[in-house]
Amino acid sequence: MPGPDDTKGWAGVFPGLAPSTGRTGTPGAPPAEMQYVPHMSQPRSTARTTAQRHRVRQELATAAMHLFSTKGYEATTVDEIAAAAGVARRTFFRHFRSKEEAIFPDHDDTLVRVQAVLDSADPGEHPLDTVCRGITEVLRMYAESPEVSVERYRLTREVPALREHEIASVARYDRLFTRYLLGHFDEAAHRAGDDDPLLAEVAASAVVAAHNHVLRRWLRAGGKGDVEAQLNHAFDVIRETFGTGMGVGRAEPAPAAPVAQQDRPGAVVVAVARTGASPAEVLRAVEKALESGVD
Image 1 (spheres, rainbow, N blue to C red):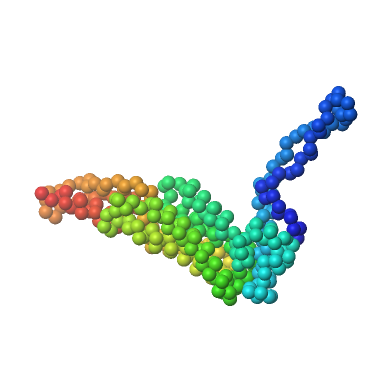
Image 2: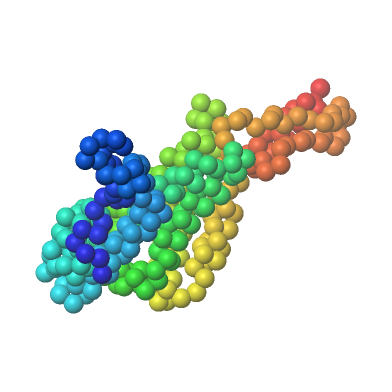
């Protein structure tokens, strides 16, 4: 277990040797071969600091869940959690804002990773696929420690305060995905039957709901099975339901144009629409082609 000050100075540096003030040839100075050589302190490895932070958080979460299970949530104090994890009270508050937050995975860091997925998405990727990749980061956070996640799930079902905290945390992802999907709709170019911004909000909520459904089913099964495969299956259902009506980026689709016209009654008219066009776009292309074939 770490000592009370093991986590002090997350972004600190290794202490270096203090340089000597002696100079060669100065009375009382040490011989040149015995002098200390001044040097700059080296920064602590970022990977090491991150690993240490993660370890302390996990130990605090484990201690909190054990105490909540044995003493009860209301009867457990922050001081008891810190002592059980072998750290000081101040160290606890470097990692968590409250005792209920202590048993939850790191939503703050995960939100940063999810945002990075959205920010780095290929412009040609379907926005719904990007959001699905983002929510997968959340699932992996839970799947990293199945035993801890299963115990957490049990506690959140029993303690209303913990359940409310979990709901509030999940809502942050819903808002993030909604903003992202809304960014792929241009209301100024909105036409009846085409890319309604309402679809963005509903689709974002559907992605989060699919994640929650798969996660709960996995947790009720004791954290067994390939949970990512189960989530990918849920994504297929979402894409089939929402994917055809959602555009990629804000670019206007290329206008459909008739490739053949006939002026005889009953003649065949051919229309062209872009690959992946929505049913509404295909219908408009057919209507234009029919209109252009009438004298």
